[in-house]
Image (cartoon, rainbow, N blue to C red; front, side, top):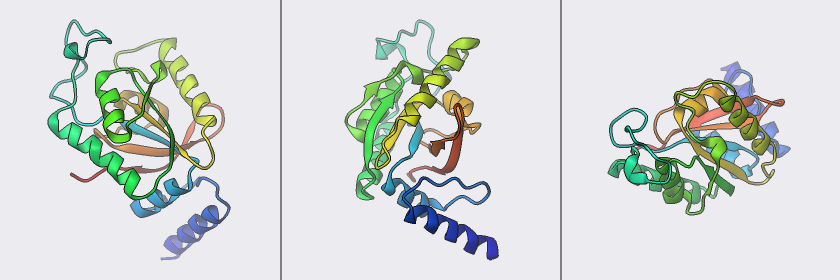
Length: 196
């Protein structure tokens, strides 16, 4: 009971100063996370919505041809629309939406938010080794630091990327809400998923 009251007090104090939260133990509940997003200043790391069955992409995959990729399922397209509706219904300000160039990510971003900028730094890190992945992460952290204080920055990417950036594995369409902490680390505020 005492911890719950203390967490609520910390959340209220962080809100009153308009600063992103940085909880070390207790995270706000779902409504608290939505309320925080409404104040702006966060990074939303979103995994693309549900795809057709499979892992990775088929042999012969090419980045410029969606027919060669594993794409969103009908349910995934509906889920992506619901994500955007949730942001608009709650009045959550979004400054920019950046996406992996994979078709499933671009389609998720477009269906949810309308406008999207392809960003190679968010391209899939699945089966990627060496310094290429590290360079992508450095670019993501640098972009996250430039987010506006009164709006939120959305990155639509892949599970492997979110896992590398936050240590969290996420479901399709799930979002990790975070703020940069130091040069190359995110402080996770919470997680959101849209109920089907």
